[in-house]
Image (tube, rainbow, N blue to C red; front, side, top):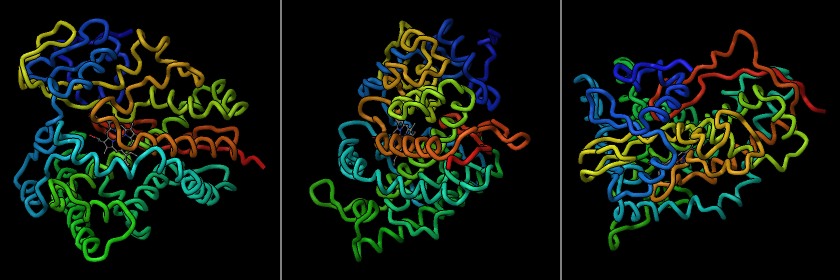
Length: 413
Ligand code: HEM
């Protein structure tokens, strides 16, 4: 294994983020709670440390919204955001007990029971998407399945007409890019324009749903009350919608696309799945473990404390690296290998744990199971189309997802 010099390592650079796995391993061996030189950021890579941190919101707060939204590097970007709504802390960046108030509003919509009841509907969208190219022998799988499936589902839930789906994709990409913090200046300006456009679109929709309520999430958020009877403010509702949108699109897309590539790279595992489709739910957990579409998340220390024997001062930022913990050899033996029947795959940290456990975990699992199950049932002899796949990822420090995916296949008749 090539070791890097930790004294000069720029962990959040695009190069490291593209190929991080050897570095995760080195950090786990040499400095599992590693302070990035010259910063107050500690990168945490061992499974047990990550789990302890995310289960302890009193010591390790999620109030890192300022960190995510800060950093507009020029006045033009600031001015554009000035035309929108200020963001308030709701789900991801809110701590208990206030977090519970917002989480209760959306828990029902994403309950396991409700998602279980959506399986036929998700299957029919998947069938419709695959029908459109099943006779072609080659497909831009990213844009003709991995991207549209989660967008169709979430847009229907939110109550956005299908004709406006390209807008949802654009807004979701802009929000993810802002979170990811690797956008250049031109991109930051475009992100700001897109995010403000998103805010005004949904602010209008909230008004309309208040006038005539419908059966969808926006209508629920627009009309349900909190704090002894008041409606959500627009910034509160917009903050929640934005999180559901970003969290629900980029990540599930990455999970489906990454799963296909893993199965192409591991033909023996693919064969096992084809001969025993009952393994698909477990295989999806293994894919989530290896792909970890949300590679990491922030926490901030509320007091002087320690993690794994390393002192952490109050106010320091911790980057909990789920993607590293998910390959920790002390929990997952041969953690870099894919085993579709691994017995403890579902212990992965891909959806976090505790207070902020992913709201959409069940939905994402269903989408991945149905998409991969349908592809396996209807197509065979998968290959990566030569000359078209970069096999690189969108630059982002929090979310990891392939840029493109073109596959060749045979239709199973
Ligand atoms: C493979 C797909 C997905 C992955 C890997 C994923 C990952 C995660 C992770 C790791 C967290 C916890 C962050 C933390 O501890 O700070 C989280 C939270 C969250 N996720 Fe997901 N997610 C996925 C899909 C979805 C979907 C489909 C939705 C919504 C429809 C969603 C909505 C959310 C929301 C709203 C939160 C914040 C919850 C809270 O703070 O209470 N996610 N997700």
